[in-house]
Image: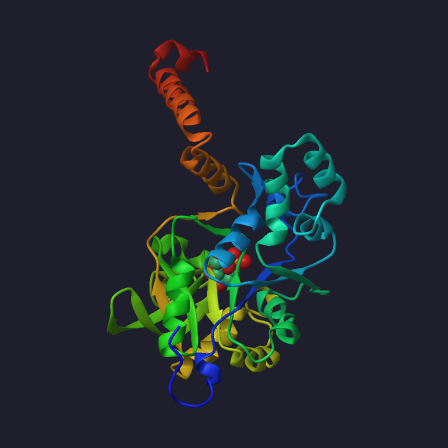
Length: 316
Ligand code: G1P
């Protein structure tokens, strides 16, 4: 890394080391599976969804991860800790592959936990990280958004923060009919491929009020200034303290950029998308992919056959 010639590193160019992962949601969309298991722990192939998020942070060089959890989330703490008896049993058997799989989560980063005592919204969850983060820029990764491990979105965002300072959001163009599900950004070109200036943000607008089709997806690199703004942010959409509303204030000052992403992103908070995620990532796995994809082709051909067959249609 090149050290700037000027004396001290200014706060705006301080490297990002910390990631914050809000994980306090109730997971009502997956009940009853999430009655006693946090939604973040639902498996995607053979790892819990939240492990992919921590792996993504670690792959981008962030070695400190703070989980903002709530009640009934102890399984997350256990997952990123050592499992002494299990590790001993696997070591005694000489099962080094599984031993590594069990040890990996605790080795990804220094993992910390803080509880969001009241479910007051995403902005409030981020505010709960203030003490841990301090005066450093930091990343926020939302667990429901899973970015394919082959993508480099977070590294691109860190690069934009390093060059432009301020805060950075990830943007994805969506069908305008879907924009009411997201934070939406008004943008202006800045003459850089894949990077825009964000001039305004609105949380879950109705299609008629949306300033663009650019949706904020769950990756942010934030300047610590956001904490001061969040402290004064009133409840907004849904009666919750919205991160989008705090970022709207920063955008009005011209300090927010957007990185436009058109790669593979999965919404594991949605049942159908969750199933697609499992299938796509299973197909990409060298150990499972070839056999699974072959079975999948046969299965789909069978479904198509069933649709085409007139007898079956009338029987149904
Ligand atoms: C949150 C944010 C929203 C963002 C979305 C991305 O909404 O509030 O601005 O677009 O995540 O997934 P949620 O999906 O938690 O309601």
